[in-house]
Length: 401
Image (cartoon, rainbow, N blue to C red):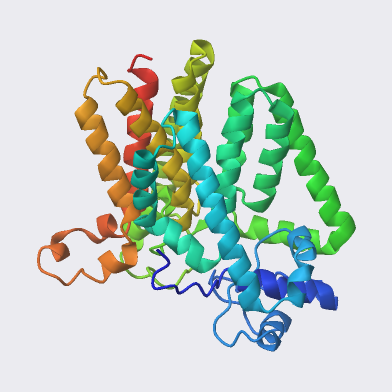
């Protein structure tokens, strides 16, 4: 489950160092980023503080709001291993809670059979293992997404807006749900999201200081329009950059901009996906059906992940929700046209996302495997998500409730 119980939590270490910087009054060094390598912190106060905290190897940069570093200051009173173990426990509990909520939402009651099937499927799901091992907060955001769906469908619009605002403050990926609420005319949720974001921003300025938030904003602007060709970026940008550069930047996390022609391809694909998303949500708003709501929610999740500039492999955990929704729909509707083909598509999509890209890339010299194009082997997560997108769209546009 945890790759041999190795959970060093390297992605938690920059948060731990940022908390120390904030506690020591050295917050000016929070965003000591390398100019073009995303996974390296250049020599300076951040690196020196990391060394004092006991991190002797490579350390990745801090990328969150200054407020998050300010709130993380209690971590400095814990050994890093204790902080990592605590986060691991919270993440596992979040995954279990997300699983139970999703099963209830889809009508697959958490019987022993379905619990066993889903637990086995998630245990073999590399994005989950990867996120747990890195010490990421992705499982917590996954719980937030499933809770958002529950709250929204229960009529708790203001509370769902507050939750969405908090999630966006932690990870920008769910921001498309602001548009989701707008298209569905859930004004209370939309307003509550905006107010929450403004409140978080104001709190960050008051508690962490204006200059550090300005540095955060400058860093976001600097990174906009850039992406990575590395194996663990499973976005459309990542696929296009790997198409352009081959294996040159698979392992160096070099920040790159799309060439003009590929940028046009991306904009065209994004425009098509946006129009389909908008039309699908309008259709589900008119139908007022439970299945349509869940499929619309799933569609927003899929587009949020695969069309973001950087979609780390552990972000694919979010796509477990659409997988379960689609399986539920196909199980409950045995007369669905092309049901077997659609179920097969969901399974192939799951396999594409579940298989670990590093292990597959290490097999490229094996007979038969070396015949598979590098772009396919290194982009299984994106391709699985794209297939899931097509199946979800078919359910929204062509299938009957």
